Image (tube, rainbow, N blue to C red; front, side, top):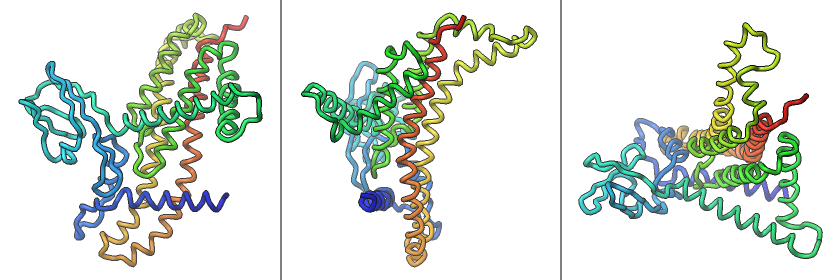
Length: 339
């Protein structure tokens, strides 16, 4: 089993180089290979789902402009180089944003790569979890297959993360925190496949997840929580003018920390993997020195394999940390004041 996993991981890490750089070498030989545009392109969102080389899946572009709804496929943009004319409206992509030439207000409702990936992950989660739940409707038998994998994971999140940090009121927040855990986990794992979207490495996604936690904390907080903000217990009176602003500022830094932690860790992992692969093309100088490229390739692939295995661990770890910190923050807001 270990040999099979190692071989599969090696093939996946090797395929990263094919997905990222096949047919995309636009640097001239005299200037050398510049990996930055390729790395930024593959961690950013886009209006098409790039697979390899010049092969891409066009995605729906949905624009609402001054009472008019325009729907067309992103293939009409020709990779953002040309414009799309819709009746008397002309659209173009400017720094990853769709704008109208006559400066008309455009509401962009397009299905981007990240949105399509999130839809795919949600459908996959529905399939996995519904299939697991239906197995409990049959006669009682020992868990097997997918059920045997998910049952201890769900119980761990419920009992060791949610219940232990929130306390008696944990059932009210179990559904949200379990959803957050599996949503982050499935997108982290999907993001490690070649050609996949960098969903949890998008700060907009992590912002919304942390915003949900912030709203739940604010709505669920009891009087004791707000009382501690305006008058921290055990604080000397002269220090209150300093501590009160710090406590209020801490209300906003908690969700901010959730947002940045998930975004930074996932994005950093993708950048490291692509950077290690880029060493092959930098050493070969766009094919001018093939011997140097082949000499660096084994070392680069081994390091990619090592980082890839760490990223699998990070995928679970970041889902665990986000859920744990959310449960801790909610628990601090709803816990009863001891007498």
